[in-house]
Amino acid sequence: MSNRYSFIGGKQGLWRVVEVRSVSGPSLELVERVNVVNDAIAKLPLDSAWVIQSFTSNIRYAMHDEVKVLQAVQPVLNRSEAVSAVLIPIKKSAQWWEMAQDERRAIFEEESHHTAVGLEYLPGVARRLLHCRDLGEQFDFLTWFEFAPEHTEAFDELLVRMRASKEWDYVEREVEVRLERDDISRT
Amino acid sequence: MSNRYSFIGGKQGLWRVVEVRSVSGPSLELVERVNVVNDAIAKLPLDSAWVIQSFTSNIRYAMHDEVKVLQAVQPVLNRSEAVSAVLIPIKKSAQWWEMAQDERRAIFEEESHHTAVGLEYLPGVARRLLHCRDLGEQFDFLTWFEFAPEHTEAFDELLVRMRASKEWDYVEREVEVRLERDDISRT
Image (cartoon, rainbow over all chains, first blue to last red; front, side, top):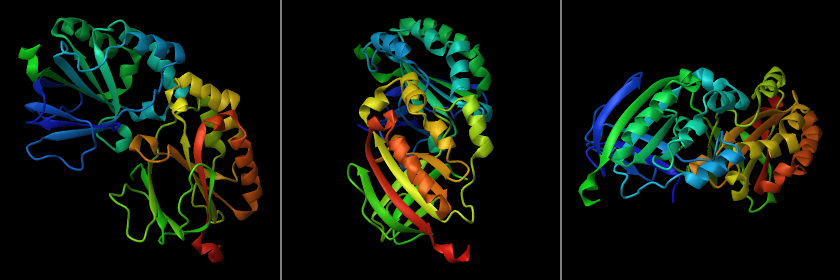
């Protein structure tokens, strides 16, 4: 299986778009659906407005003990009840990327408690982090979240807490794409 | 300028191949020249035997103080006297990549002194680290070194020390490509 994922905004795919909004900086064009393809794609498919190319990678900040706790409680994607999804592409500032590893780690966890806060919302909210910056994309990362509709309020609270953190001082563009899975009637 | 670099083994390019040898695992095919292209390439050019795609990225292990020391002494590439180059593609084990950030950092620096040892060979040896693993390449990284011929012995000693380190227990494939720049007569 490829480590590459392409998120294609257009008229195809399992996930129907409910809302596209900018949190910081320019938004993405509103589309009907997002097609999540587990591969790199050479060019934008017909009938599509945008594509974000990305890859999964090794852990960048979490320490051994944090990884163990996360692995014990984090849910998988594609749970039958998790018919709500949110796609959040983010771009951080040049200042963030110029920092050394220990400086970014200190802001990420010791100051912002990124992993610790995220843990409070497990196992309700499933999450996949994908990297884009090294591919020359317009965003640096994107995070894909999946949860059952009853966890929406908790998820919204998680976003408020993350966006109030020190780490978010370095976020210069952020878009929020809310989605629902097509087969909602079959669950 | 793109963060992407393609190293094309074939008959083109400024750098003439002196030797290709395997340090661990399968070697690369012996070629006449390596063409270093500052871009992604879509497919292997005619008359070429191999290509390694890569990108430069943010710092992964070095801490603030280490970065400051490095920045103060590291030389640039393309110095007129640096007509010797070595391309070293490396693949690390699955066990390395499954470790958390603090575990990899501890092996990289506290146990293996990667940055500290490298510093001893500056400013003689210029170096560019490139990442390949996230592109699905056969190697995880490659390092490109450039130096004047009188630093060859010191460079060889650097390699011996690195390969004797704990970090190298996790290297499962390593190839060494020695090169000379064409315009050697003009320096």
